[in-house]
Length: 311
Image (cartoon, rainbow, N blue to C red; front, top):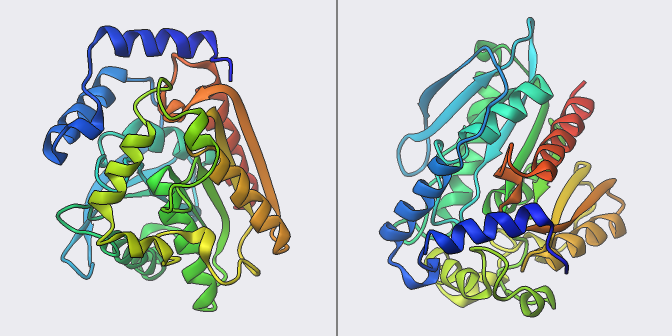
């Protein structure tokens, strides 16, 4: 559990900024802190052809999406992307650089989804919006210049949760368009169990054990929802027949054991899995480009996997 020197510097900068703990804040205040952190992080996005914002039909009204187009001609595959933030924080802007980098790296159209979040819209609202965005993408594919037979789902943290759930839903619906599920330190069990919750409970960035408990309280309607596979995809009755998976983990992360365990669960069900753990990294490192070398490497790793799977 030796932190990478670049992560040590990042944690020192956070400490010097005296950022309040997420779990000490009301959701609106936590969102303001999260947004400010994303803005301060900045980053150098990959060059792409452009991006546009739209609203797509959803069960609770229009679901905002941002559509990123690569510098590539012809009909392209597409990636449905879900941002992280514990199903409470985050938006299209906080993860804009990540989405642009995945678009440029994969040469696929990336559709980033701004799903409803708790506590205003508790589980399963986010799941319903994710499914609505997926169904919209299938129908709108010709107009978007997208091949509806070459899709992938991708997300980090809470977004990885939604991507994993969506892969299960599509399988159960008998649909085979999803060729890859790319899950970056995903939340796969809202029971919040595992030894990594003890090992990395405090001192490894903003995602503490207390923060995960805070997210759980604000996202789920009650603790009983953790038993629903749509909240905890690791608890699905079967994982057979799912699309191949790429799973990225950070070593020093309360969610480390969940990601590693889900990789084993999928393998046991016969699903092809490419699992990579980045030593000395913390939760959230995936978005810390270009300051963290392994963030650059991890984004390239996921983008390359998407490009290969959607070729």
